[in-house]
Structures are given as C-alpha cells and as structure tokens.
Image 1 (cartoon, helix red, strand yellow):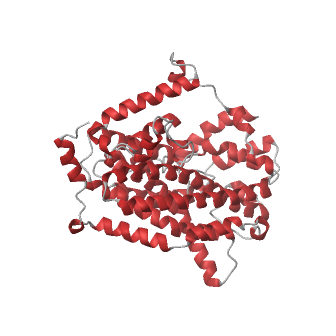
Image 2 (spheres, rainbow, N blue to C red):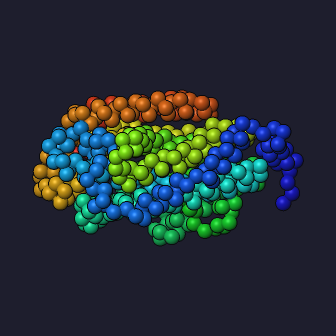
Image 3 (cartoon, helix red, strand yellow):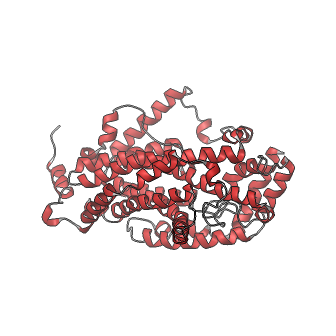
Length: 456
C-alpha cells in the first residue's frame, strides 16, 4: 500500500526529535533510565522476598499503627496486642496484593504502548526504560505474593486462601447484554466481540495505522491481551479493557494517555508507601530492627520513583510531541479517567486506611477475617461487629478523610494540567464528592443490609 503525502507529513511532524531540538523531557527520560539501570533496589526486593520468614518478623509492626486493617474502629480498640499486630501485618499484605495486581497491568500496558513508541522512532530510551520497568515488576510481584502467602497462612490458616463465601453471594447475570440474543457459545461470543472491537478501533484510528503497536502486531489474530485485576478489576469489565488495550496500542496520543491512568495508581501507592518509607528511615536512624516487609516498602518506593517519573513525563509532556487528539481520542480519554475516579476514588473506607472506596467490596474479606482463627467469632458476632465498624462514625473514617484530602489535592494539581480533559476530570470532582463520611456510612448501611441477609 502506498503511503500518502499526508501520512508522510504527519510522520515527519511526529519524528521531529533531532539532537538540535531535543526537549527537556528527553533529557529527563535519559537521566531516569540511567539512574534506574544503575540502581540495585529490585535485587534487594527479590532477596528480601526469597529470604522472608514470618516468625522472624511477627513481633514488630510493619509500619505505623494507624496503617492497620480496621484501625480506628470500635473493634480495633477492643483487640489484643497480638491481634493489633496481625491487623497491621494484614494491612500491608492487602495493600501490596492490590499493588501486585496493578503492576501486572503495568507489565502488559508497558509493552502495548512501547510497541507504539517503537514505531515512531526517536523514543528508544523511553522504550528501554519501559522494558526495564516490566522486568522489575516481575520481581516486585513475586516478593509481594511470597510475603503475602506466608503471612496469611501464619495468621489465618490455609483455609484463608480460598473464598467459598463469594459463591454464596454470587448473583445471576441480569444485565442487558445477558438478555440479548447474542452468540451462546463462549468462544463464538468472544470472537465476535473482539472482531467488533478491532473493526471499531481500526476505523477510529485509521490516520495512525503506521503506529499500531508492534507488540499487538506480533500477536496477530490471537485473543486481545488484557488483565483481570488491578485497575481492570474495579473500574471496567474484562471486555472493556480489551477494547482499551487496542486503543492504547493504536495511536501515539492514546499510548501517552495510558500514563495518565497509570499515574493514578502511582499516586495512590505513594499515598501510603511514603509513610512506610518514613518509618524505615526513623528505625534506621535509631538503629532499631527493621522488619523485612518494611524494607521491601522502602526499596519499592525508590524503584517506583523511576516509574512515577516516567508516568509523569509521558502523560504531561511527551503527548505534546504528537498531533492534538481527535474528538474520539478526547472522548475515550475522558471516559477512562472518569471511570477510574468512579471505581477507585469515589468513596471512603471505614476499615482500610488510605483506601478511597466504600466498604461494599471488602465486606466479604472483613467477615472472613472476623470468623478466622485470629478472632474466632461466630457468624452473628461477626455481623454485629461489622455493623459497628462500617455503619457508625468512628476515628477511622476521620483519619481516612485526611488522607483523602491530601491525595485529592495532589490529583487536582496533576490532572489540572491536562487541557484535553473535561472539568469533571481536571478538577477530580467525583473524588472530591467521595470525601463525605456521612455518605460513606449511608452507602455502607445499604450494602450491609444485603450482605448480612446473605450470610446469616
């Protein structure tokens, strides 16, 4: 197929990155990659994971006491010293379980977007940094999972690794799609869906055909890659993320836009991980024992600082190298940020500090915790305490609101600079509206009634 003069002109505009016109963000990318390559934080994280022994770390807090599951609730006030230690450890495990899921997202979408930047030319160092990040994430995830597994088995028993209660609470599919007369065979439906996604994406990004991700290109007609946890688990369906995979891999602007979504994960992580970092420095200053998980948090923040810098520079500066987004790209970008606000940042947890979602999604986990050997409650006692912890005002809600307000300010500063976003996203209005203890409790009450009825 002949390349049109318009395509050539477009490509020349995209590739205007000669040595004489190198921008500041190229210098920052070069410096970040150099510093990341020379660091040994990933190796230290890997070693800490391989050598982790729970019993050697069980008698110390793995962070400030307020970074504990159910901190500030009536139950926490009644808990024994050993139970409070366990709640502190389980908070660390839970947060890094979520981080591991988010980093599995990163591994995929680094490759998808790097495949676009590779096609552009002139972004070799950026692509090398993204490849290095993907390599590092594998070791991060392995360590988080290893520490999490050993800790949960030690505190809750192996039965905690299953989740049969979810089956009891599962609901039949009553969505509109479920009622439509679409292909009944799962493989046929998936194939039909993916073909439709490919056709739409190809049409909407037809002017960027030369930049279709090499990563996706090499997969050919294989199933569209996606992930099921992390951002994908709370903001949109699996099929929606398949559609996003294609879009993030189909144009330079959308490839850069992905990093504004990734920045939400980076900033959310830093909101609590920086407190672990400070605790590490305080113990180090006093020459006190530093538990292995806290060391992991310390080195992970240092590793992730490189990743956060890349999210920032790509989403804030690199996207300006490319032609302005089309109306379709603006629409999709805004829907993505809106959904991330709605799924990740639109509430307040009463039981998990630095978590800005209502407790609806966590009730099953809380219930299983209270009925585990750690607390040994009957079903009725667990329901009683859940109601007190989630449906009544307490210190935990107020502490979380302080964290929420701090992160909201940072989010507004970051997204306020993206001129293609709607005001609701630039100003993070959904997140701002979620900072209400009264509303959080009301939503918890509604969800609790349904939950209690299902398990009792």
